[in-house]
Image 1 (tube, rainbow, N blue to C red):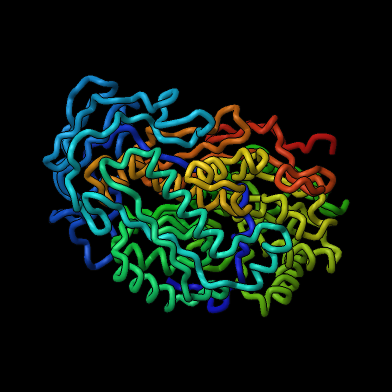
Image 2 (cartoon, rainbow, N blue to C red):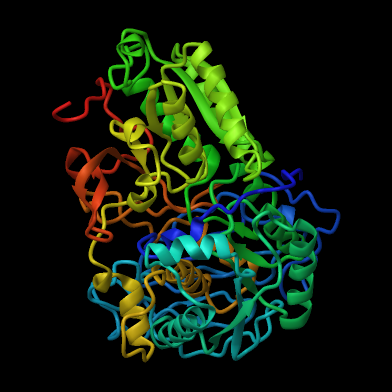
Length: 564
């Protein structure tokens, strides 16, 4: 996999305060069905305890469970035949667990409104009865009769990123993050059903540079940590520009949750190991493509900043990183937009601080000369800072359009962009409306794990990853391995959000979909709006009363910014 030699810091750590409330897990493991795509690796041996079935024979399109009262009927072996599924409710039947019977009837007094616990914790998994059986013991690497080992990774410190996060009061030290992870571990072990096991989180402060990414170091460190800790899973929450570690961990057959907005094929080719908390790149392209074709195509560029461009029918440039994992989604978005009659100009860039300014000047000159009216940012959150500055310097004022990804839609980052350019920025946004930090689930989890203070401002992001991990572990059932974990997430039985609640996403993993957020709102930038995030001026305003749109739901009417 090719990755540009010098990538600048993606600044993804700046969003650590208010992101995902992710929790996706089914209530019953489905039967094995044919795979959509095998792993591309030479070694496709068994996953789990002593099985011989190849990964290619595992689940690709599981079906949802039928009731919150069921205990997952996990497979007897990773490549073999699934166990008998337990029934929903409290019928007293058993579910197959590789030879160990698990009662589907049991104590559910801990459950609240069909969830494992609550109230006020919408991302809790579906209720399952308290486990009273004997788990099957060591079912795969990192899983014993008593523990589930998971590595939580923090990369080498980058002072450029740290300086920015400190300036926005978002920085969390290694000590603060480790403290939070330990409290979260305690909370998970007290609330989730792990079938006689306890989650054992290993906090690792790594040695590899990620800005630019040291790919060889990442692969070496991944191998070393797997050899040292033998984890079932591996989490790293802020590495969108670093596919090498996810690739290496998948080759090592370690479940890994990391990497943002990659080509969806990256995950499916590495199934059942790689997952993404955020919307996959291909899914993002299709959702935004639908929005463009229904709301924008064939109309004049009314929100451009110059009369000359406002008089023209929209012509698009798609700004995107030139990394392999980002190019495919950008091409898909371009194909969709062309299909509904809009002209498209490809505008790739290399994430290189040494050349970012010169690249932006060259790109802007090209877009201006070709009459582009609307720049779509399918980019990291720092690229628009360079591009908008260059555009103003060349007296070029196109429409600035969000694709929804990359945290370009995060209030604090929006303030980094040239205000003359960004005053009418708009488009889809994957992020949600925010509530005050002390109401976030990260704070509830931290205090539930014994913390007596408010955790560091960035705690919501690591909690989102840990919440999803824990839900998958519970819903995988007693026979835990990579395949039962995959079934747990992909069944979709614990989907939530996407309704009238503007403070929640639609969280959905499904057949062929290994990424979480699956809907978007519409927003526009208002330099005078007070942000819910930090109480400062400059924020994205939700349209349609914060309604979120799933694929196929965008209205076929012209997009209009209220009052403009």
